[in-house]
Amino acid sequence: MIQQPLRIGMMLCLLLSGSLLWAQRPGQDPNMHGPGHSFPGHPPTPEEREAARQRIGITVQQQGQIEQMVTDSEKQRRDLGGQLHALYQQLGETYDSYTFDRVQEKDLRKKITDVHWKLLKVHTETEERLRKILNQDQFAKMRAEMRSHRGDRRSREPGRGEHGPGPGQPGGRPGEPPPG
Image (cartoon, rainbow, N blue to C red; front, side):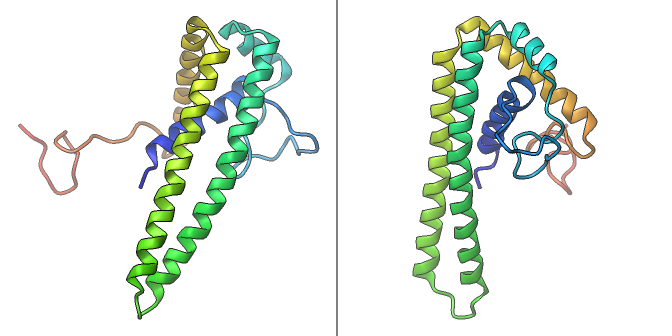
């Protein structure tokens, strides 16, 4: 399954819409957070938003463009995520049936793959739009801010952090001794 690129895309959008450039939706409860909400935690204060904007060195106009970009891509991702959820439910039902329909299963796998491809395309388009809004220096500062925020969050959240070692690395596969 294609999870890592989706996580990267989500992180970009969460950071831009959340900690760096929070844009509260009309009627949204500011205390709502977690799954299904723009930022997993409290929204930053206007002072924190302004400080982040200044650290990155973007204008208020650029901030507005980024917020609109994030809103647009977030809507697309939510729509596609809903499609994925429904397709995975159908696939599960197909697997639950003793009379396994191989043709239906293959069709569902293709549809799931197509939706994942569309999600990756939304991520790529968002990255391209971001580079049209920011200059190279602003982009580098924003990425550094994102890395800093991501590291801070990982240290606060139990069970979150860097992924473990890959195959061939010490501890990379259960039951295998480290190389060397």
